[in-house]
Image 1: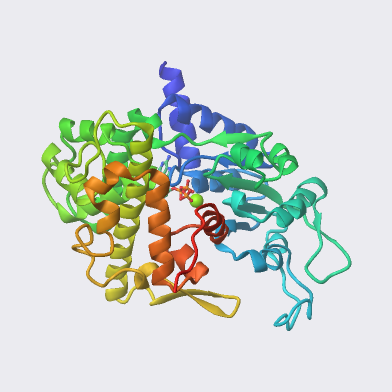
Image 2 (image 1 turned 45 degrees about the vertical axis):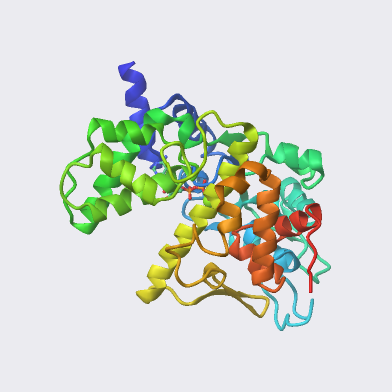
Length: 406
Ligand SMILES: Nc1ncnc2c1ncn2[C@@H]1O[C@H](COP(=O)(O)OP(=O)(O)OP(=O)(O)O)[C@@H](O)[C@H]1O
Ligand SMILES: [Mg+2]
């Protein structure tokens, strides 16, 4: 037993991945085994569970560590330009291609490319990824001769790719090629034993970084946190702890403080009396709850971003692609977010009576329809605001048969 803990401690330190639970231990062992090899790896796990951390550890502990680690969020790149982003293009390949351009694969030569949200890549691009995986070569857009690169591929998805294969949106051959080595990052609620360890670590780090006092959590406080669902996983826990440590400078953090912050988070869990979610909820109710949680998380992120913008820390508009500017989700919601639960725009979705009668799909349809209307049916802006891949949005519009009404 002592030996086992010792081994886990060593691996935790080595990879910067915390956790003592059985799920994390076996994950650390797999990382230890596969990191030094060139084998491609698929990382599966819910949002915020630590997939990027795993990918970075694989790169850092490989012979490629001194070469580039290129992170590509496949879900954030519009379908129309994804191939030129990944594989580069030749001068004149399309309007606006004024010169040759290197793609991410070339940029990662000798190192590792991390294809995050690989499930979001269009089917045509998936064929090309398979070719890179199998032969290490690809064709830049507009070029007639293929290029060879020495790149290790690590991919991640928070979707169930097996289901995507069944529904035809992910290629079977690519899936089988990728899944040979799969590292599944457990969700936080499947590793509740790790919550106290993580909470203390995040709190201590935050206190040191901000030079404030943190005296610890009461036992009750740790228990409440370890029973919470944490739909946003470690990312959510980390943000939660950091804001609490900063705002509660000083004393020991007790149970009631945790309850207060969990409620303020407006996360519709069993701990939150604001929302009509019963403990013995059905699958349908649980799905509705999930959608609501997404809504609330989005709302919180927007509020946080607004805070940063007000402080002048981030620009009003983010990124630029395809000549068209991307706008932040801030433009979707009214300026004052404080009353949103009661606000005109969200009342239909959050009204308890309606919740009782709507299915999860209806709630989602409603949310998408309203967002589309706000953006005058601009799909890219709507997808950004909903933090949903543009392709997913198209699929849902079709599925729900949402049409623009005049
Ligand atoms: N085991 C862990 N120990 C310490 N910190 C962790 C651990 N797992 C995740 N984190 C931290 O949690 C945050 C979220 O992790 P990460 O970005 O790797 O998640 P993700 O699975 O890639 O999420 P998404 O699907 O949303 O991209 C990061 O700040 C990361 O450093
Ligand atoms: Mg990630």
